[in-house]
Amino acid sequence: MGGEFRLTFFAEDASRAERAAKGAYRRIAELEQIMSDYRPSSEVRGLVFGGSQPVSRELFEVLTMAQEISARTDGAFDVTAGPVVKLWRNARATGRLPGAIELAQARSFVGWQNVKLDPKYRSVTILRDGVLIDLGGIAKGYSCDEAVRILGSYGVKSAIVQAGGDLVVGDAPPGSEGWPVRIPGEEEPRLLANCAVSTSGDTEQFIEVDGVRYSHIVDPRTGVGVTNRVMVTVIADRGLVSDPLATAFCVMGRAGVSVARDFGVSLVLSVE
Image (tube, rainbow, N blue to C red; front, top):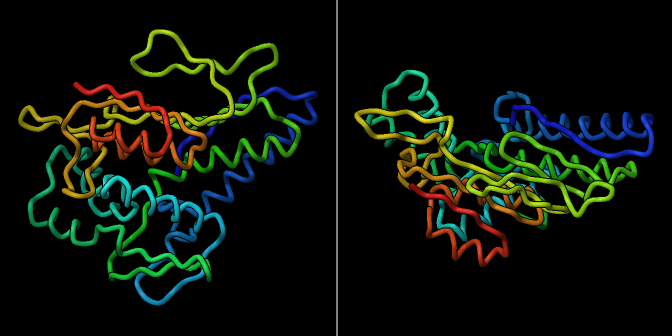
């Protein structure tokens, strides 16, 4: 996952606040060890082509949601998109677009259908050699969910946890209707409680070549960085849902409106 997690909350006293914060950060570290594709020893890095592999409850829950969203967005979100994402990460670093051959090779390993889940045995089977799972578009949202849950277990119910463009809010602060959250494209902050908010777009990470701007957000179906200027915010009941949908809707553009309706989430979409 990487990145910084920021916790803001109200607690009865300093002692409870310290215990709650330590518990939440400990949980985030546990999930990092499960889901980070940057750590060679992480659980998700151990998922390779071959037989069925039993996995932790957390990893199975995240993969189950990822597969559901992949199916319902026609592959606009795909946790197997890692090979093409890495190509575009290198492109931003070098200023050179991926070549047709290397892009085709990377795309050959992309396809969420190559990941089979078995709920009976809580196991995962990778059906094609070379397929790698990258949870960068969903793990942070889930980790924010879990951090808020852990804070609540210490009696800290009024909290907000943020990691990059993802945040999850618990109960409203004392004396307020909600936490003030700024949504891109809206003048006034919204007062929100007990929900998740994820914002995704290409405002900071992109490459421009021959007058065409390619986002760091890649369409898994084509392997090409999104070229429409888009900023998406999704408000859902969980970060596990808002995080991947924000990425998917950046790829889908206005076509994501009907999917948002199916999921029962709020969508704020800005396309240039």
